[in-house]
Image 1 (cartoon, rainbow, N blue to C red):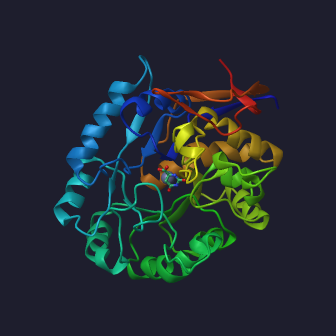
Image 2 (cartoon, protein in one colour):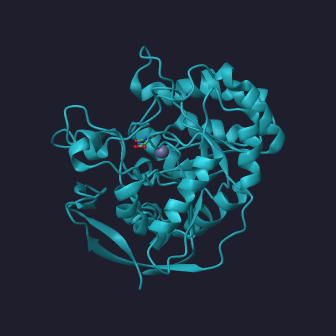
Image 3 (cartoon, rainbow, N blue to C red):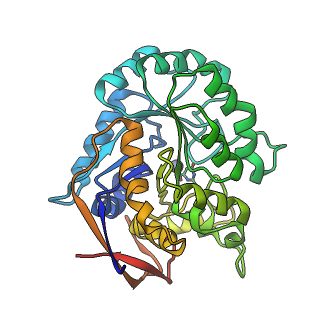
Length: 343
Ligand code: DOR
Ligand code: ZN
């Protein structure tokens, strides 16, 4: 099978940034995906419905002419988020509320310090059926960076899912065997998104022949056994697992630095990278549901009706892409993608 026709997919976890960065990256996502769940970790963070709707307008205004792409907006949860804002979010069609433990990742400093402090908000979200999207890592410096997801699940996520039994929860960018097993065993209403890098790379990719800042993201790449578990979940056909690229652009200078930013840009290969991983695993027949149905069904959205055709034919990746007045180094820079979009 050298061509593959998919239902138009959805990216259930995407960073689009704002201003010139947004203008530089948006076309890559819009060319591939019908919709994307857009993360709210801007500076300042998107903590109000008014800010989210204004951001949605800026995204629409930055779309190339003729593009058919719908941003699915989210709210950034803080300990001060009022119940009224959550109700307004639901009424305005926002699809979820993002929980960043304070200090866990890029622009998370306005996030949540103590999970107990947001129990009132979670109560409301459970009542109105507004999903919680979780960056699942502890920030405790005593916990090894490679263990932060597993420890978060044990200490925080498992109790939270039990305490709010009707709250819909996405463990975003699952990276570990423990994460996959947790979601598989969880009650209905618990799901996980999966990135292309956690499907195809293990932590060795951070140190291949030298330090590789463009393979650095959070949660960080894990051991091979975890990559294998994440891949097995993705190709299993289990509807709890769906596509979320976590494409997170940072300027080349901010990545290639003494203290480089976390985030991998993958929107330029946002579906092709998954096709390659599913193909290598002999599971291309499972890609359509993973990319186009499971996410829509979880979010209660209509499934997309259009199609996207892919062709198995290598395409070289440039060393970098324009990014406002800077440059952006994409995943596979200087290498190639095994699949491409058929015109
Ligand atoms: O690597 C990451 N980059 N992980 C995140 O959670 C945030 C993201 C970003 O916004 O750059
Ligand atoms: Zn993210």
